[in-house]
Length: 102
Image (spheres, rainbow, N blue to C red):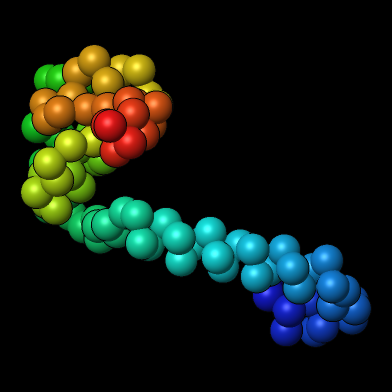
């Protein structure tokens, strides 16, 4: 909860609440440095339906559609199904770290 919303609710913004807020924003900014945000629209849903032959999970198929839109070189995921059935190169986070530090 943003500090202004905490104050508006009548609660005191403690040092802990402020620190948690800053930490959360730091996480978001860090993700932005390490990953690409890909918008999703109706065309992605259409593309996702084409991945249905790979597997039946709509959320996974939307991830694959986003990868296609962004022309990603590979997928990093902990999802075992995506690791096995991805139409592009797929790595676990552990394997990516090993690759980056090699």
